[in-house]
Image (cartoon, rainbow, N blue to C red):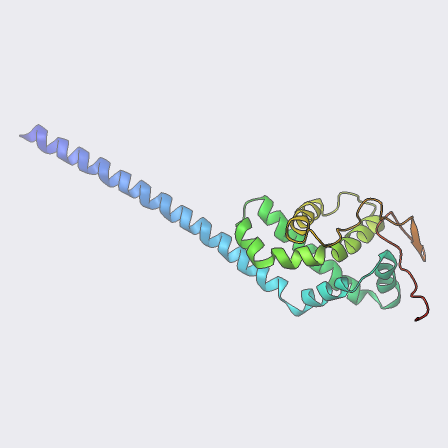
Length: 191
């Protein structure tokens, strides 16, 4: 009888330890999920901030690489910093997706279409920045993700710097830009 009681005590202890393990694992998993959700909310709040929105809008108005250089040179660096900050926030979002820190499906639901629309103009900023910093791999993760989104969600719209549409080397002031996008064309006389 004593042996049977100790067997029950041992079995009960084992079941309690298994239950404790399951609860610990669930707590760890739910905490990790909560951190991912918190990170996405933080990124989302940054992306809807007025500063980032102004940078996105400024980049959306670009027509060619010369426009980026003009903004940098003529209008002071504040607008450039806003465009650059928007680019950096999108890069951070893309990095967090690649590192599995946030759910890619949810990130795409929140920002995919906006990035797909913005990307051809955002690529002008990125390409100018790459030529400025002489770093051809700058923001590669963003470029890959945003290009994929643009091609999948906006297949009928022109892509960023499509082959055969790249401009020759553009020089503005003392800054040389690479083969980035179509040159700005002056409008002809109204007919």
